[in-house]
Amino acid sequence: MKNIKLSIDKAFGFVSAEKVAGYKAEVEAANAALHNGTGKGSDFLGWLNLPSSIDEAHLSDLEATAKLLREKCEVVVVIGIGGSYLGAKAVIDALSNSFDWLITDRKSPVVVYAGQNIGEDYLYELQELLKNKKFGIISISKSGTTTEPALAFRLLKTQLEEQQGKEAAKELIVAVTDKARGALRTLATQEGYKTYVIEDNIGGRYSVLSPVGLLPIAVAGFDIRQFVCGAVSMETQCGLSTSYEENVAGQYAAVRNELYKNGKKIEILVNFHPKLHFIGEWWKQLYGESEGKDNLGIYPASVDLTTDLHSMGQWIQEGERTIFETVISVNEPNFTKIFPNDKDNLDGLNFLAGKRVDEVNKMAELGTMIAHIDGGVPNLKIELPKLNEFYLGQLLYFFEKACGISGYLLGVNPFDQPGVEAYKKNMFALLEKPGYEAETKAIKARL
Ligand code: PA5
Image (cartoon, rainbow, N blue to C red):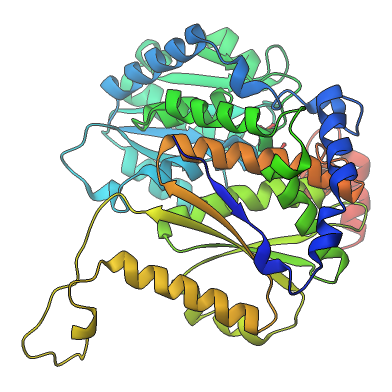
């Protein structure tokens, strides 16, 4: 197996290579702080050695549960928000047929999502879709008390019980939650659902290699062994004994921090394959929640190219020069499509005849990179040899490790998210949740 590859040389017109090389001591110290548990947020380092700690029994158990849901369900609803759904969706989308939901001759259930919003139309339409369908539920919430997924779960559980009967419904519900605390754990214990534990020391955005990500990915029909294998290989490559010169996660952390210090306050994650859209969404949560605090942090944005070159392309090329981009490039697509010759050539495209569509895409990628560098946008690149489970495992663990190191370089705790609570408090006060009487009074006085 090859490895994903990081290239940072196209940032060196904007920040000096010597300065980036000079991060050696800091990066190695940050990496050691992660491994020795001496840095900020060290009680949330369960993700660090998670890939290599996954054993055969755990994988087999996940596969057996996935098989059951695959056999019994046409649709599986993954309920969760933030870190409790983004990793699964990112991987499933990246590996699925782009028109998956339209495929009738299916080997796997359609995976849909709920609890990631409170849109009434969304939930209404989902429940309409599920009427008379054989569906199952994977309900994921570490706290077990998050409003959005709890609300969706109550609705869908009720529907499932009405459609299947209470006893049969129990076989179609799996809960992934804390081992002891929270309403979802209480419910699961009372109802006798199959459950998986999210360990105390694994935060939501670092949980894709726990059952939070692995179970839905297996249900969708993908090889979680290869996914874990990829993550293990990256865990080894970026381990405690890896020097800065060999540590791709450390180098990515260093160069983005140096860019930030030089006024590049926004990082745009770029893809050239639409099925990678949710890798961008997952990555934004990982970096946004990990670094955006204490009035610090690179703002993580993402675009799908070439689509967004016809919308955000103008801004990227000529807007405020506070951005840099990180391109995820896939070396070899999974399928081949050759552009045909046309004898009339009315569209003038015969110069492309005989070329792969990917060659056109790659030239768009190269042309964009040169244009953006000329326009003052530093470019980092991460190459995936192919889009498969193994390299996605490498990529996601790479980003997690780099995020931990990067947060330490920035001086923040990359494992907490105190800012997420503010809206919840106001929402509960506005909804007059019991226990929030004083907050309700205070907030209503402000309206
Ligand atoms: O990364 C995080 O910790 C958050 O985004 C959570 O994943 C998200 O808020 C959902 O929390 P929970 O899994 O407790 O429902």
